[in-house]
Length: 268
Image 1 (cartoon, rainbow, N blue to C red):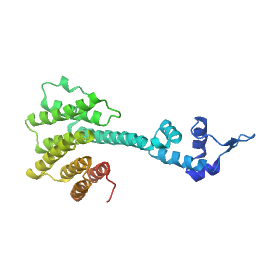
Image 2 (spheres, helix red, strand yellow):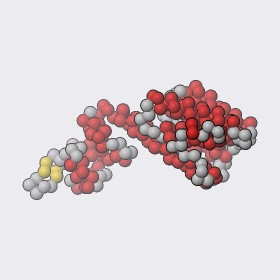
Image 3 (cartoon, one colour):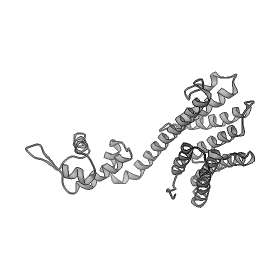
Image 4 (spheres, rainbow, N blue to C red):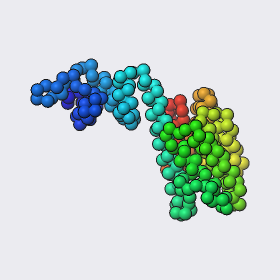
């Protein structure tokens, strides 16, 4: 067992666990209770280690070992899970920034925006955060996809009605609409709202991370459309804009988002 664990990059504890749950049974257990594995099982053990390194559930790893043709579907499902997890973290980062500037009265994603009928700012913020909640949810239903889309548009609308809104508020609303459409595989509206964000940045001399995220949204929209050349071109513009971001954490947020663009391998 120890030799198998070393060759596969697993711990002995993990190998024993995989035996107990039936994922990787030993070829032979001798009278002393020692587990013996055949050389042919090393490949399976390595595959388990690789899939676990990206958090593929053990049940799905078992499905792959039983039928290797399922690998593509399993990886696609896990990619969606990781994307949702990434969006959830980004949503938490967004809330944290608002808590820092607006205090603890800032509406959380669980807030029902319909309760705040007299306050455009609170409605806009609550809808924005409720949209993030659905963006980061794994295995959304079709109805939730619709709700996510409508709330993103509603948030952008209510921001425009806040008396002291800034162009940046509107641009970020356009960015969220673009992200939702990209997640739904709809490239044309994703590109439309991404371009609106870039136009707002240019018309109002907005730079820093807003400008970088506008290029990121355009890159993502082109990637969804299947235009790898344009996706790379706008990614390169996003990278150039990211160099001028004043805060290191904001720059890392942009770079991390660029890594999640579908179908585009990191080239920087």
